[in-house]
Image (tube, rainbow, N blue to C red):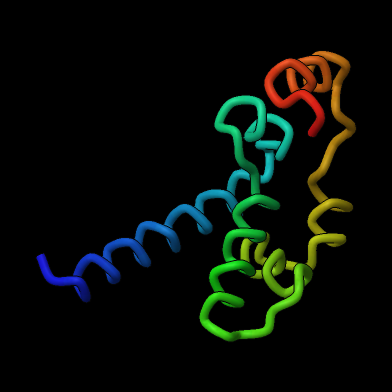
Length: 98
């Protein structure tokens, strides 16, 4: 497999992940953090860091809009729910100090 093919496959998989996360608004970021160790915000941070590594200026809001498919504040208003005591306890257990 060529480097270009690898790049294209990785890009396609990334786009599919983003599409999946945008459709699964029922899945809260805290659940992703507790189960997978990353969330939409982590993914947007990684995207921003990759852009900056290529010399492309990108702020956090722009990166989050790419991942969320809308401005972050709009997503939070539409889809984010209050974390339950159980979710918070799990977060503290799995990611102490986060």
